[in-house]
Length: 158
Length: 299
Image 1 (tube, rainbow over the protein chains, first blue to last red):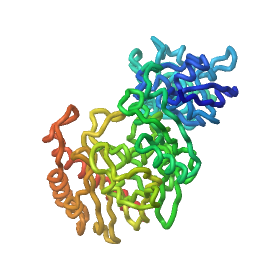
Image 2 (image 1 turned 180 degrees about the horizontal axis):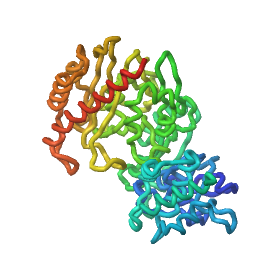
Image 3 (image 1 turned 30 degrees about the horizontal axis):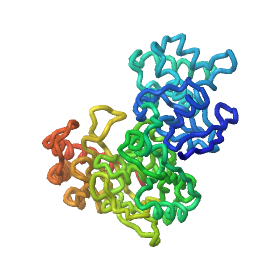
């Protein structure tokens, strides 16, 4: 069996794990590193539930092999809060009731953070396009978009 | 999909990430067709994990610097085969020169998918509905291929042979895609018809690339259609309808008619033959209107 040794950085921590070539980054995060915040929805890159940031790029961790993570810096939902203090996006999601079942939420939080890192003042339309790869079957999206816009406002200091 | 350790094929698969083009070619050549190239992996991983592809070896080309770069050269561009869609979209100079190609690349899946997917992969996957391919054909783009016998070049329009089939031989890979120098007053555009705005597959795609003279008369045009035949088509008759005109209403009508006439579509769940034929004319016409506006803005 082909086992590969991988060293990477996850949420700022140096990690090492073994994986088979066919294993995805999503599986390594959840099953090897026990970071179960990142969810599997479709497993085919359509739903965005498994979104993580790899070297600054938003990607679906189900469409990336774990072995490709060698030397990369990975950010997951577990790295968003600072200790007990939630990230503004997390707080605004709670305030606006932007989640129900919660399966899509980690991916949407990560995707929204990736947007706000590039664009501090997105329009509603820009938020909707950026999040087009994240499916939510509960909220109808409106509250998610409101929460992201409100978080952006707060983070700009307005 | 849960990972299945019982699946012998996938558990024996090896992974290599060579640092040179020569290294990648040697691995591909030695694998006797059992290797698959991994760039963005957004199509390949789905094939592997569903069992539709069972490669013994994955050759990741992302560690090869030449394949990761966007180089402006001799007035044109050379886009490495492993450049991601997001990297290309964010390259402002490229987007200014070839907005129609960026139109197509922007439509290749979500932000997440575009963070990994490449234009080279979109081309090599050889889907008749690939969104970047009609714009590349309209642009006159050239595929730079490297293999055990050296390098060769092929126009994008001849590279895809049919669904899932390209002209790549054993051990060959796409190193880059080359875009020619832009003449003044040139513009291009790509439009597709899909039921949804995002996250969908083209029912019809149309790309128009044209160059105007100082008086606004179209001197050069190329028109390409996607998803209306086994591969994206170059449609010289549609381009001929524009050349020598100011891209007025009569020229646009002739363009639309010629585009519709060139279609050889199939019926499927996304659209009927009749619908695709009709919509191809409409999309080509609308793309021409955008291309000519862009050409007028380009000094």
